[in-house]
Image (cartoon, rainbow, N blue to C red; front, top):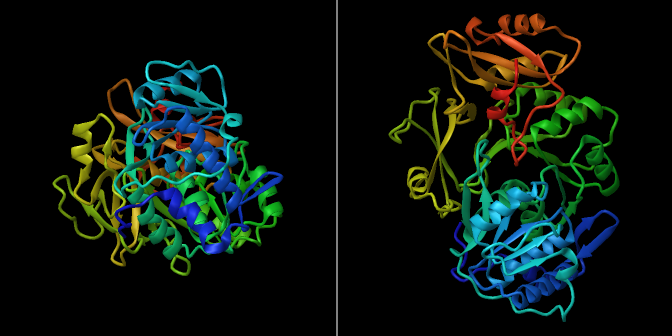
Length: 488
């Protein structure tokens, strides 16, 4: 799906809604406040004016690190209007990590909610939320090319600085139409609510770009996503689509059996594999369809997904129409159905490059395809199944083991709320699976026996440690590198 050659996301997602007569429709709900499309446009125009005054130029970078709310949306669209690229950064990061990303990206303007960040080598202006308002509220959105950089997304690395994935206006147009409009069938009647925050590309699309593209409403809240917060927002604002992740799916089914989710027509899940057991618990508890899918920063957003009426629990579904997905060997050749190989995802949302990583860019970005480290298999009906990452597979007793298989088995035990399995190297130099479990009411041996009774013996965890929480990356995924460092 190719955008017009001269194309700007702010024009397409915001200015066009006002021009077509939807200016008085509610675009955002932020706590007690609601904002129409005309009000969001005015705030974005004011932000664009302030960015120009601060010296931001077309193709320069603006670092954006704010909690979800009207100020975030105004800054994002305001930067697009100027023709700048936005570096979206988790506002919960410590100062030193934000400072590192400022220098790394060479952003000339930053929008932050803290004053402790110094200017550094490249930064010309540091603006807070209060600095984004004022002025006439009129601004002529600059013309940009569809292949101009719109956003820097950060991949979910677990060690060191994550890779910066540079994505164009074109990529967001492609997937907003193919997945948001055509696959999820979003309309102006939809209200979206998301677990992840807007700095995460999954939420940028599902809880902003997708509803804005059809005149719908996005529900934002700045506080941490918890099951109780989600239930409260659902019961108060009555969203029709919930953008979820497995961790919160689990929390919600554990604590919310009596809560009212009747306003939802569907929910999505991405970010991590959704175990079949957890899918079934969700359906039994709430009766709402839950569509598990897979997306990457490199091929922006979801390109593999289950579909309403065609869900196969435990699978990632089939390719979203408009994308091509393959399972390949190390040479890029497709493997037979049923065999495990690397995921290759092709489409018109492929990233331009990794910033300052030419070798990694050449290895991963192949024509229209992104060659991933995710391992998949495809069944005879075309459904895809996640088998872990190439760097997470464990060689145990001379055989390959996917931690996700053991985790799914552990989750079928009623005492296990969350878990993660990693490889631990013993004094003999051999790798064995080891489980970290959140839960109570079961002994270590009971959980070992539970897996032994259901999987081949070499797959059972040789040890189990009960923990209060699991370490997570900046995108909320389980940080397996940190887990391997924990004492056992």
